[in-house]
Amino acid sequence: MKMRSEQVSGHRCLVWESSTSRSPQVLFIGLHGLGTSANDLVSLTEYLAIGSCCFVFPDAPFTAPHSGVRSYAWYDIEIESEVQQRFQIQQSCNYLMQIISYFQKMYAPITTTPNLPTILFGFSQGGVLALETGLRYDGFLSGIIVMSGYWPDPIRTQPAIKASQSLPILFLHGTEDLVIPVQGSQHACEQLVQVGFHPQLKTFNMGHEISEKSLQVAVDFLKQLKLSE
Picture 1 (cartoon, rainbow, N blue to C red):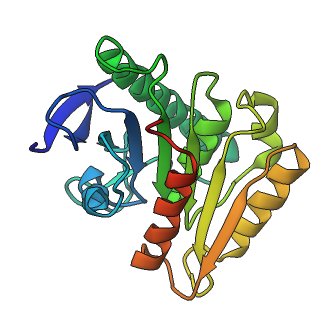
Picture 2: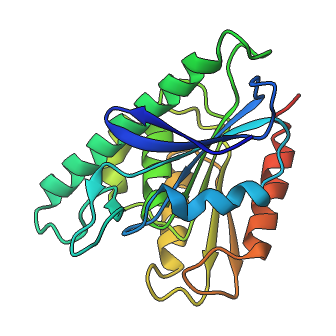
């Protein structure tokens, strides 16, 4: 099955289905980091063998500052106003919820499950949005994977949390990460525990990157969720 492009709310999503039957059992939404695009995570389809799956890789809705063509951001880290930055995060969350709804509805007539198991995965700034969106989403989610991410403002997000405290959340982070230090994930986990969640944190001897070892831990996490059953 070839990669195709879908437009959701005026933005591009790259879509790849691992089954030619067009009846996926899992919806996987992968969010790229700052200054890249949907193309950046497409290679994940080679590693994340999770049965019959629809992979969706959206472009972030904002243009990254000081960037070239197809270079996007989920929010502008250079904005001095915290209020404006939070507003952009909220806009990106709303956009991602529209994406979830769009693909859930697309496959609803043909899937064999009442709610298509859905995973949010994000790297770096994409990890921030995977966490923010997953916590705010009041529909069905199977899990969140945050790689090299952080939780920018837990206090302001906590009143908006609608997710069940049983929602599986996995953090993956390099101990040598100089872009977003591992303390970002550690602090996020501590804050999540305080509000009743049970996140997992796995660290690796690596920098700000995605490695085969970290992806294997992600695969093991997905297998534990028994998404195809």
